[in-house]
Image (cartoon, rainbow, N blue to C red):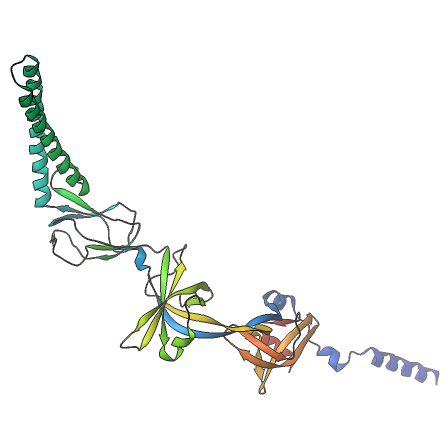
Length: 357
């Protein structure tokens, strides 16, 4: 009888210390998942509406230089290729020009005339001192020397303008620092001054424009000064921020869209002309403020919006919320959350499934 009683007590003690089924299934956040998990605090934010516009990156036209040949001639040498970076004043090509050859010849003749008139003036001064010639004759010799010197200076100024140091060759130089974005000349090509197309186009990439398309239905919603966020396919996780600085007044006859211009600094040259851009225009909703969380925090299941409220690694709560409005960045909460609470905004689907199995 005593042995049966002892066995009963052991069974009872063992059963009292066996973990319950609910304790075995309790979710605990692992250290690996915690490192990758992202939390965001519920905050009171101004309500923002948005428009998503298509656009593309272009050069800042105010920093683009179209380079024309100063005079006709033949291309002797090309110094750059398409896409090369050039400094201001750097030669782009060398041109052999008959007109420059003419100026060089005139320079030689003018220099000789200066020397002759200078010699005549020296002789005239000696003769005047000796009383052989009159003051008027001395004056005429001085005027002749001044005229020859002036003509020589004029020709030198012309050659300096063409950057000619010697002979009939002059360089086509870049007036700005930037990248060669267009090159319309080839070696030995004849250049004519009446040509209306530039030989080179050089543009800076330190600042770029984003030209966004506004459909007619959205024209009234866009204002100069609206804040924008620009994303590109090349850098999907990077946001470039700016403001609309101009809305053009002419519709594109084919697409029936209006262009909005955004100027963006481009210090690391990440943005390239002709890149596709997605432009998010932020439209302020007046002075209204609401509790907001990142839109990616929402888990939609069973026709309801849920969030995961983080209390601790052992206490993560699945909570149903009521959404007032949302945009691509924020969801505004009508009920279900309080300011200061923290919600999970990454890997929340995995955690939600683990909690609700």
